Image (tube, rainbow, N blue to C red):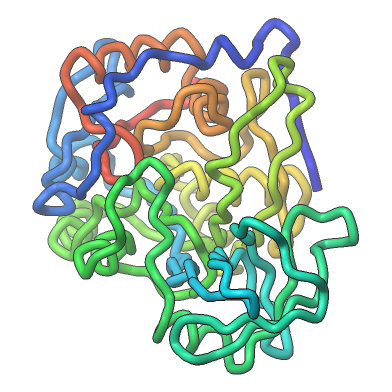
Length: 347
């Protein structure tokens, strides 16, 4: 399923900005809720700390989280020739099969069996989803989730320059993650800890969950200046019945639906646009998109020229978002997955 509504007036260059490299966070803040929070929902931007979030929400508001769990999807091995190979598992199928990105100097032939670090093997079955696909289908010699848990590495984003550590295994994961399948964290939710969740409940804020297994395609660059020509990657999502009921109850009491992260936005708006509570989505949210569910958005700061910059610009208004980013850079906010957050109001 695909939806795109980009006005031709917007091009890729419109979503570019200069970011000092030192503002790219390489490690998380010492405390999850100790990150900074730029309140962009007010008339003028207000610099806050994330643990102040309860003061910015009303009793009866509904926070919707993405409860996906990041898997240790990065695996290393060697071909029979001795050449190094790296896999990034994108999706687990049936019968010990997986779909993965493959990084290797010379691709092995279909049928080749690769010796993976940890003592298991991976047989190349072909490309995916078809013979022209950019991903590859492998069959592991054991249960994929168990093998990744034992021998895999945390799939840190490409702009984080250190190898994964025990800190990353703990902090590149939300405190409420429950459904394994993501290869990138729903990063806006990384700021929530148990104390903050308790404070939100005490405030009278309601909570609900959706699942979207974030794929490596979230870091895929947009290569066409005409953004309408960009094809979004597919990600699996699910909106459970209790969450639908919670949204209906939120509307009935006149409160606001607050999405935690762009992945939650994509999930809720996919459900609203297409009527499916479960399946793959390629929804492409750009300026001009008509939001049906989400009223407010908590989100981290995104890469220049990215589809996520387009999404937040569609949500809060292009000029507003670019002004907030300029403020964040001037105030030395920390950017990207391990960085700070902001609160946005739907335009």
